[in-house]
Image 1: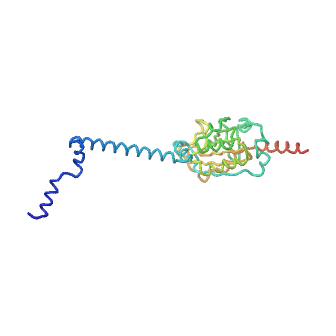
Image 2: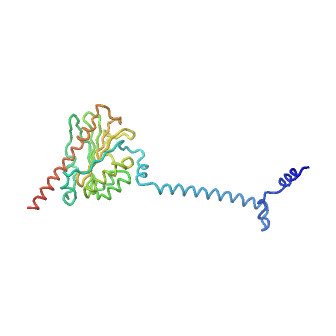
Image 3: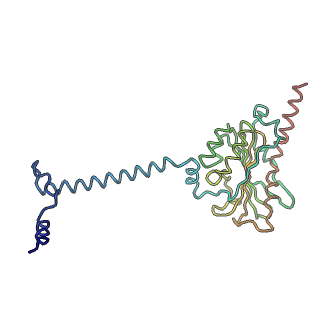
Length: 272
């Protein structure tokens, strides 16, 4: 028999190096196998706990916007969004201290219809909330409203006279024009996971998977969110004038022009 064969026989007859390593302290072969099984189970459980902790840590690292997006699954939101900061025209009402009178739903949505060109929108419902968070969804937007000192949210929902379009308008009463600018600009990034809650109405529903457009407009210490869609959720065709639709629903902002005049007059009277 060759030396190589002899070596192989010796190696095959030798027990695994750690098979009886606990024998010197009085633990027999059977007991060692039980301990081995228990060790494997403990290792599996430990790795499972570690995996769960890792998943939990991933959740802690998720940003507010991502959380808002996750919570917003199944909620309608705009496909596109544009923001406009406050024009100089609204400087007299750049601060709520100069325009302290609270908004009313009738002041903003007193007209039963609003028009622009061939577009006529009929008001279906309106609502004023003292809790601004009740008018929106998404932690990012809720946080922005709190930071902006929001005291009121006024919403109105419209249906076009030809029943082809739905429009929704939300106005927020904020602390300053700077806060309003910050809010509408923040939605440039946040709008897919944070948006306004549409007033529920069976005749004017924003399709979850349909196309819609949104825009944010700062006007002094106010911010308005416009939301437009076709009733069938389809993308705009050549004969769909969303610009005219936006101008029609923004007719409700005329109330703020009256506030600008009132604030300017008050200022002039004080100077005299």
